[in-house]
Length: 449
Image (cartoon, rainbow, N blue to C red; front, top):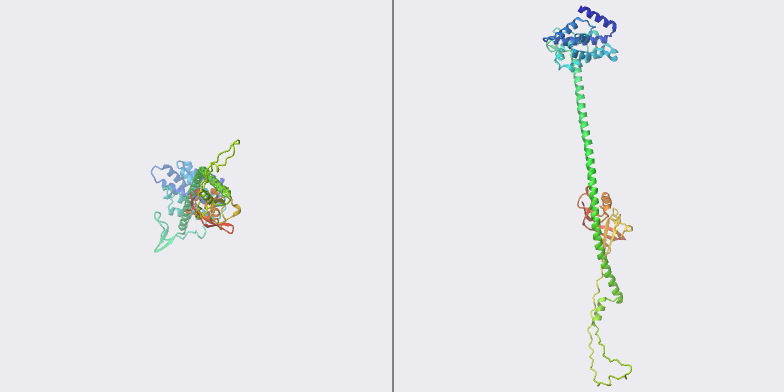
């Protein structure tokens, strides 16, 4: 009855599906692998279904489908899934169109990949020993003649035992390497190399993703922190500018009061000199002090109705005392008063790279473009001291373009950085008037803070 079932099954399969030689070779591969697997499993105690599947695989012909046998008995669907995976090759149009040699090579690769994937499983690794694989390949070669490169060698006098290693065939003292197994080992090694390469590519890709992600997070944090720092610096600059403006306004009022008092004194002095006719005021004052003061004579006042009486006639004549004139010592000339030194203050924009200031841009008051304050003494009008003094709102611009606006006239104690917001003076510079142009002679010393 059982043989009849398989006969009918084979007849139906043969009539329903006209298999090609390539597909028949794949079925042979799947059946031989299934026989090896269930032959090993059936040796364990209590594996009755595995024994039944193995017996049916032994009894059925070359055209039977191992998956149908496994499903009909049941209990080993996991093995059936793997057999389905092994037989997927025959369902591809590319494989069916291959020549016998190409199909043989493709089946060998399929067997090697299947063994490499499941060799760690005892149900597949041990049953598919090199000797078993060699027997399967020999059956495949009988259906699909291989190419000359993968042709099987002639049988040796001493065949390799089933349980022993099958990498070599021993014949006397000579050793011959089996090309089939050598080919299988090459394919297995290539597959391992490909898997290792893919693994390293995954690792490198993951590392690259981590590095890029970390860089993006760092960039976002850096930009956020930089924005907060810029906001704090802007607020600090605003408060400092307000304080400096208030201090400058208070100090400017004191200086203006002192200058007003000096101007009043100078005007009084000029008026005094003009009143004296251009003479030295001290000389005129001393001459007035040395002149004698004459006392006024007491003469009676006459009434209109009284006769005039000569006072000389009414009093006795007395001899007038003789006045002895004595010569006064000559006056020593007085030293002239020292002239009042007046300092001139004016402002200039930044000089040119040669350290020359443009006279056409000279300003008596601090303007938005002013950067340097000049002080000139009247005693030496060709020499001036200067210092960096600019509108607080323009200091940041001057520091940004310090190479053109600060460094031609100033040296700095420290290096500039983006955190610096103001400039303090350490030493005034000196400039000379040459051919109508103010030129830097000694640079001022500043410090960035």
